[in-house]
Amino acid sequence: MSFDVTKIREEFPILATQVGKKPLVYLDNAATTQKPQEVIDVLDSYYSETNANIHRGVHHLAEKATEAYEQSRREVAQFIHAATEDEVIFVRGTTEGINLIANTFGNKFIEAGDEIIISTMEHHANIVPWQLFCEARGAVLKVIPVSDAGELEMDSYESLLSERTKLVSVVHASNSLGIINPVKSIIEKAHGVGAKVLLDGAQAVGHFPVDVQELDCDFYVFSGHKLFSATGIGVVYGKYDLLDSMPPYQGGGDMISRVSFEGTTYKAPPGRFEAGTPHISGAIALAASIRYLEKQDRAALLDYEHELLEYATESLSEIEGLKIIGTAAKKVSLVSFTMEGTHPHDVATVLDADGIAVRAGHHCTQPLLQRFGVPATARASFAFYNTREEIDKLAQALTKIQVLFA
Amino acid sequence: MSDLTQLYQDIILGHNKRPRNYGALEGYSGKAEKNNPLCGDEVSVYWKTEDDRISDLRFTAQGCAISRASASIMTELLSGKSKKESVALFDAFRTLLEEEGGAASEEAELGDLMALSGVRQYPSRIKCAFLPWQALLEEWA
Figure 1 (cartoon, chains in turn yellow, brown):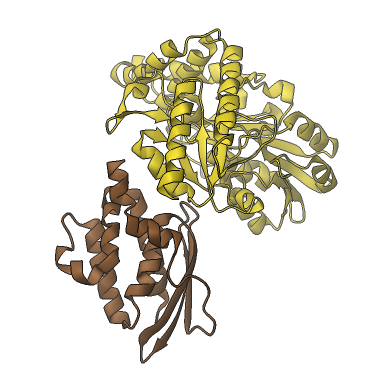
Figure 2 (figure 1 turned 30 degrees about the vertical axis):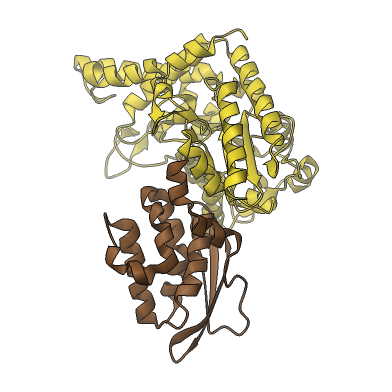
């Protein structure tokens, strides 16, 4: 192991807190990640030293805040390897990002009878905006099925593609099962029929490096709070020419070039898509969490997370009556499971009594869980600050559940 | 595990494992389904009435121990009850779970529901306990 998990844990103050009298064991990282002290400090210092509105003041603080906000955009662009920072739009999160693309790209380029392809394993955030859009526009939603192991059925995907396909929108890594999708192949095949591709990277960016140019995706969206940063900030990446061809998302201040009652013209991207005062401190905190991550040996972090996943998979598999849902080989570090005779909610409540935080429910992926014939699962999701000892505690507590509900 | 044994009392675990009046009812006079969009729990309640009183009340559920036990106890408690009496019992149950020191006076009529009093310490689980009751009382005309 080429990094020191004890030292890493000291950088996340919440990890030293207790739940009741038990040390916190935080295994709900797919819901949101915890924040390192330096991100918390950046949020604090923004409001105590920099706070001003951006893009409109000429005074010192306004310029300082504007520069910090735009510097964050440059750092995000570098982080995902965008060609230019003008390809980075700040939004509230992944959900708003997908809605933005539906309301701009969708409204401009997708007509009645055109098709949008998503998959069975999508988060509701990548299902419902397209259902709303298709209902309003008369477009058709097609769904890629998943195998028993939780992988996309690529043959079915290819047979769904046609010249009617205008957009393929799929998750990079599943929040519910952890499966990492073969997005490069998905993108190549979509481009083969002239369709654009949107990737939901909410569960990907916090785990492994993403290069949007190498992937050649047309859009990529993610949330800051799953990347060790603040809630309420997220990113839409789009290829510049595509963004430039799209109409505005919301109307308001800061997105216009010139307003008159005869006709209003709009800013070039990304400004066109950022109406109103944005989450300035959130954008700055996002850049801080990116700097934090880039300081680490990311390959070592990923190896370590993978070790945790293997260890958890082994430990949990030994528990009688426990079934892991999503057994494909390529996964981010999370384990979704059911326990015979015990509902996931009860599992989560019993674990909570031991200070262990997991998620129980449908994880906003009801169609996927219907596919596996379960109404809910319990999900333990890991970050690089988790330890094997924490997984041992999880396994011990799960064994107690068997006794309690026997 | 002391907090947990407050929540998962033997009475609750018993109802969860061997729910009373479980299964669909043929020839019902009323049926209601309710789900909890947050967690995906689902309950279906079926009932027959005679002279405006419950003569048979059954349920099926995909849910946690709390919602299953609550449904199971409900089917026993409401047998022979009118709508008005049923609403009054649910109100007493709500007082038990939502108000500090609530429901001491209703202890007798609440019966096995008293075993759910531990849910008060788990605000996110209260909705599980109410789900079957709300299903029935929102639909029962």
